[in-house]
Length: 232
Image 1 (tube, rainbow, N blue to C red):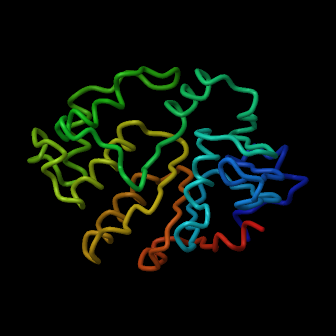
Image 2 (cartoon, rainbow, N blue to C red):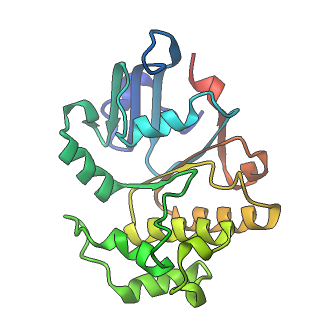
């Protein structure tokens, strides 16, 4: 596959965003192996869909890449940085600066409004971007079609609108890498299409990795593989 690089060359390639080497993940509190990844290298700017059934480890794979958990064996590198060498503080800073996460459960704060949820991504200035402003947040809300909902509590929004708020937070953050876990699984055909169009637009020039069992979204991706093809 064009987005996967040769194992020997990928270590030194400046175009490589994500590299997993000899990964072993075991079930919590058990010696039983959930999955193994021999070698996975993702080229910067790739848009990739990883398809697979629920409960096989797709979410765990994203958590490994985001540094939210560690494998029992092997290494995960982001932009040539081995996540095992970073402190928790360093990992948090890396996620703030480089990674946009869209969780299956969205992780929105129900008692905050749409714009307040988005502005949470501007509270921590990064080394590479200035602090975002409310005007920028409003422009992003308009882009995702939620300008009129800016002062509505996210708990009162529809599921499709909540998904758009989650994508708006990624737009606000402007990360290099976007990781999305089942972004359309609970949406109808119309809203699934709208959410994917927004997500693809937000990911222009960035690395986008989506895991999903929703076959409707395959048409949005030039590169598709199955989770079973990546693991053993």
